[in-house]
Structure formats: C-alpha cells, structure tokens
Length: 294
Image (cartoon, rainbow, N blue to C red):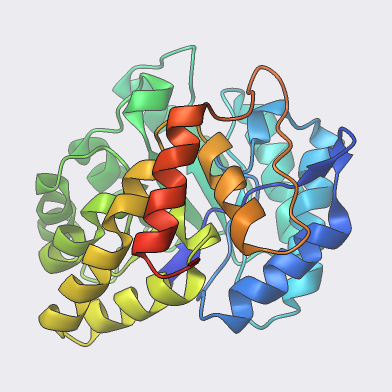
C-alpha cells in the first residue's frame, strides 16, 4: 500500500503555537519533491508535547493540504489505548489512509499486552494500521512473533510496520512469516539501503524533511534495483542521516530546515531545546556534503 520516501514531518511552531502556514508550505514542498506519503504527528512531529486538540489540527491540516495528492499516515500512537482510538477515529473522519501506531511507551506492556492493545484497536475501527517499533524510545520491543501474530489475526487491518529496531534480520523474519503484501518500511535512514535489499519497500524518514528529492530518488533507485545509483545517493545522504541525531531529535532536523526551507523557524517545545554547537556543525557539514547548501 505504501512505498518510497515518506517523511515523518516536523511540526513547526511560532511563538509557542502551531505554525499552520509554514506547515502547509512544507506539505506542498514535500509533495513537489517526490515524497510518496506523509506522516504527521510522529516522534519527529513532537507529538508528545501536543495537546489532543493540536494533535488533531496538525493531522487535519496535513490531510487538507495534501488534498489527495499523496496518502497521509496519521500518527495516532499513545500509551493509552483509548487515546490511540480517539486519534484514529478523528484521523479516519478526516480522510487518513492509515494510522501509525507506536508501541505503548513508559508503561512497558508485555508481548501479551501489545497483542491486546493492537487487537483492540484493529477490532474497534476500520482504519489500516502501520505498526511502529522503536524500542530505543519506547523501551518496549514488538517482537517478530508478535508482529506475525497480529498480521495473522487482522490481515486486512495490520498492513505494515515502520521498523526502527535496528535489527535487519527482522525484515526477513517478517517477510517469511507474513504474506508478501505486508508493507515493511525502515524507520532508520542510515539502514534504508540494506533494509531495502532484505525486502523493505520504503522508509519513514527524518532526513526526508530536509532532503526530500534526494530521499525520493534514492528510494526510486532501490525500487528499480539500481544498486549503483542507490549507493551513490546513499553516500550523499549518509552524513546527514547521522547529523539528524547528533542532539535530541528533532532539534537538528529543525535547525537543518531553517537552512534549506525559507521562513522555517527552529522552535521546539520544552523539554526539548535547540541543538548544541556540535550538532549544528555536523548538520552544516552534512548539508554541504549532500549539495543542499554551498
């Protein structure tokens, strides 16, 4: 259902509030530069510091501005199952193509708890679900056997995964345990090339916020089996992938956007603060290496 370069969109702020005009321009820029879908209100979108009203407005604006040109996978994850259902209900009403659901964080459910959480959501709303596994942030790992069981129970509802586990063997685990139609998307930009070789079909990307055309071209080369071109583009992007995490994300990506996207402010919400000098230097050098600035 989904493939290619899919940015996990930042949420721009101005004077403490959601900067809707800048976000609308960002959506247009992403689509014009080849992004194949959009993800608002993910980790990079600072969803943890958005009120529910703000969260819903960001999703609504994204869908409205995309205007059917590309699908929107709405970030609906929560460590409260009922709140995740609330986000999903709103997103479906707005026209989202799917919900991105991160593993519940902080309360650290067992694998049985994860099965219960995702099963409840799959049973209570008719909206496709892309699982999101990022154990470095959630301290909860959606094990391959749990992913496979969820896809077995709900083949029309649990349709894919954003895998940021860092374990490339899982691409094969999922591919061999689930039908070939299960959509596997990398959640780690720096692993997108080997992830694709193992059977992935795209990446929900941080770097694509800053370099949408390069990321889209890279994914197109992977899909075409053009390894030489994919490797060339990956080499251009590689320092930028790492620079995006030289300090707490999305500090570096917002700083980078302030350099390449006119009128973008790098404001963050506490407890996040602007990235440090070392991160800024790494971003600056990576932007030059990628040919995005002179």
